[in-house]
Image 1 (spheres, rainbow, N blue to C red):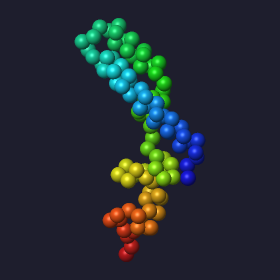
Image 2 (image 1 turned 135 degrees about the vertical axis):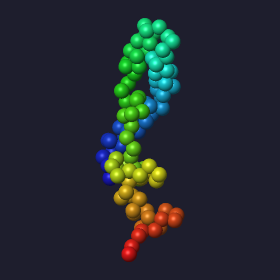
Image 3 (image 1 turned 45 degrees about the vertical axis):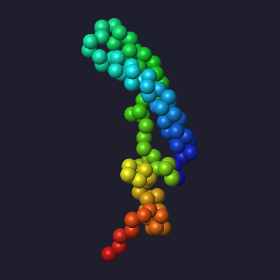
Image 4 (image 1 turned 90 degrees about the vertical axis):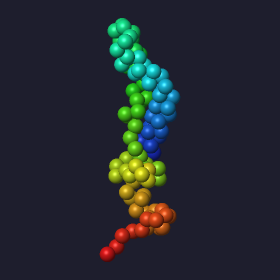
Length: 101
């Protein structure tokens, strides 16, 4: 099980990303628009830099929905390899069988 503080920090980042997503996208679009004057584009870059760091989507890290584990994460199942194996062994994932030979 992952540390509770790390899971809570991740949830806080997810909330910040959702809160600032539209503002961040608008500022990024303004800063990349070559038709605008350089001063206006520079102001957009400065405004973008003043937003909270954790509101950037690149600071998010995928975590297991069950255990909160950040490593060995399968995107398709949204869980770690350990949680996936436990659920598969119990037969709780339809169509998945633990292999043996």
